[in-house]
Image (cartoon, rainbow, N blue to C red):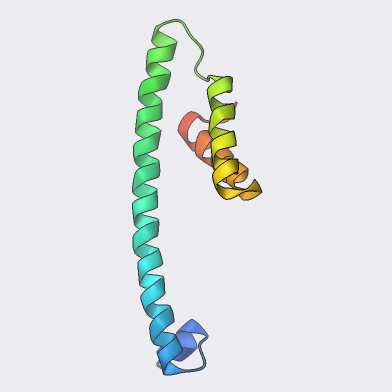
Length: 95
């Protein structure tokens, strides 16, 4: 059985289904870009950690992480803090 675009999107009209389909394609493209940026951020973070450890410092700089948490919270509200925590965990691992 073939699923129509309206059924696939949950829309009740063909016009709404077209809008939703186009917007979903845009979201998929944005998600791919976001994932690429996160991977780039992880690589840059690894360089910073290596330099810090090699110089005798700690792997994590908690005051810097607090700055990042504040930045995300200010920009995105309370959910921004959760997002920043996830990014920090991806970039440095759990502490």
